[in-house]
Structure formats: C-alpha cells, structure tokens
Image 1 (cartoon, rainbow, N blue to C red):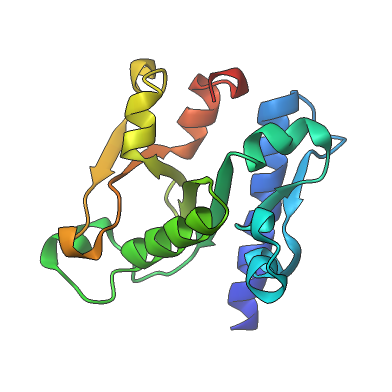
Image 2: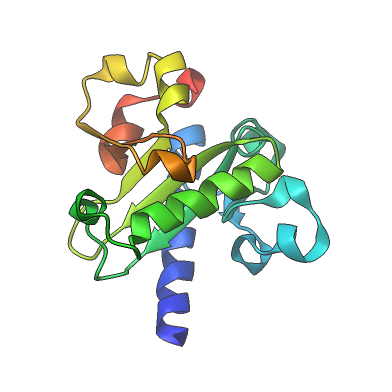
Length: 175
C-alpha cells in the first residue's frame, strides 16, 4: 500500500506543477500543491474549503481552487471504462467520481476528477452540466467521453477529456 501512496503523491505533485504551468506559464514559483493529508484535512478538521487533493498556495491560484474540488487518482490496474456497461459493482471510476462529487458538494464547489492509468494518457473529468454551461470547452474540438452512471445512484454525468489536450486547448481564462 505504501507504494500506492507514493505513486499517488508523486502524481499529485505532477498535477500541481502542471496546473501551475497552465495558469502562470512558468515552472519555478508554484501556485498549487498537494493538500495536507491528501484531501483528508476537510474530513479531519472541518476545513471545508480544503477539499480535494490540490490546494492553491498563492493567491493567484485561488480562482481555480475556490471554484473546483480536484480529486486525483492514479494506478488501479483493474479499472476499465467498459466496466460501467457491465454494471460491475466495484467500478472504480464510478467510486472515484462519487467521492469527487461528495467532496465538492461539501465545499460548494464543482467536482473535477483527474485519473491516470499506467501506459495511458491522464484524463480530466467535469460534470457534464458544467461543461455544457461552459460551451467553450466543447467548442475546442477535443476528444471526449461522456459517462452516465446508474440513475438511482444520483451521480451527475461526467465528461472526460484527454488531460494533456485539455490543458493545451483550454486557457485558464476560459474557466
């Protein structure tokens, strides 16, 4: 398990650097970093504004973390998008999205899920309703996948984009 935590922490640091570069255009002075306890601080101390795995460490980054609760997952070799079509009980992507939505709801933010499976480009997911409202996302002609979970579970639809393509085509100002 420790190896999984190390991989997760490393990926969270990579995402923090990616977000910094995307927002600031530079690498040196980080705007974002891993949240304390990797997102668990909100549960421990009721710091509801610190949900998710990424926080802003500079005021310039608050525009993003005040609006979005960012959940980051990596690994989970048995995770496959096609599992939801078979109605498999332990569908990891669905569990990740459920956690992401729950954390975001607690802090009155929009959920964002970033997931990477070994050997595959990372993906970034938003509530489909939010993306439709922000039609700039969809007008970028990016490859996307819309996932609808069982209606009885009351999870919002999520639209996933290739994360690298998303950060190349969507600017911070469009968020």
